Image (cartoon, rainbow, N blue to C red; front, side, top):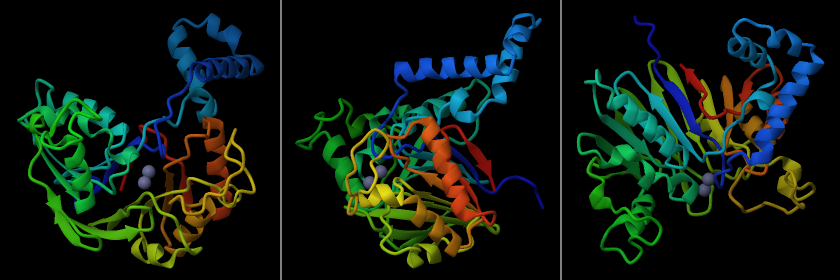
Length: 341
Ligand SMILES: [Zn+2]
Ligand SMILES: [Zn+2]
């Protein structure tokens, strides 16, 4: 029995709705906050006299709160899952471009002679889950093989903007499908359909979202990862989603709003209150209740609202964890986070 991971999951984009890069004043604010904190702890004088100043600074920064020294990132949805026999990429938001750059570097390294195949699983065609497609460099390399698994509506929308014969060709992006020599024929799936990629069993589940959205459940060797992005829970807990995610090691779902924001009693940070019912997204409270009902080990709260700052996200994670108590771990996954099952 090998100790190798069954699923290695890396988050390349976890922001919901639209990309949200850090603004210049936010970057400056982080530098000021970190220096202020180090001064308060009386660490600055010691740093100045360290023999290796850079290493000493890195060591001091590493113990500061994550939202001060770093960022959750601002790219929209893109998640990489490596299994023992296949590479799977979930959704193609702006994080997909970053993933493409990393993949090109990996596959084009001088000593690399491994597989150049990946499976791209797309939840739905909304722009924040698809606009990274033409900016994914490995699609253009004829040595590569990409199989896209999605519903008819995803393929129809990609066709509309990327087929050179479509009226919308070159309206949204210059490239067209025929330039993407690494793309293989479509693997069309229907909501509720089960299929396999290598030794991994994949089940699908239709989520409640305007235009539709598909959740994926990956099972292999007793490990389970559920990727259930855009979804507006109708009941709390959502018994159908809880049944689909039952006993998962990780349930990734979305908690874009708090219950007060959803009902319009409170505004999102910096915004006036506005009810969000019918917008297709869930509350943190609903996600925690559903994850508890599903008896999952860990809840990953993705599709974070772009209005939230890094400090807001740390508070949101603490709030969600307080709702979950100590029976389940809750994480707001930052870009670059990798977990193995
Ligand atoms: Zn979305
Ligand atoms: Zn959506």
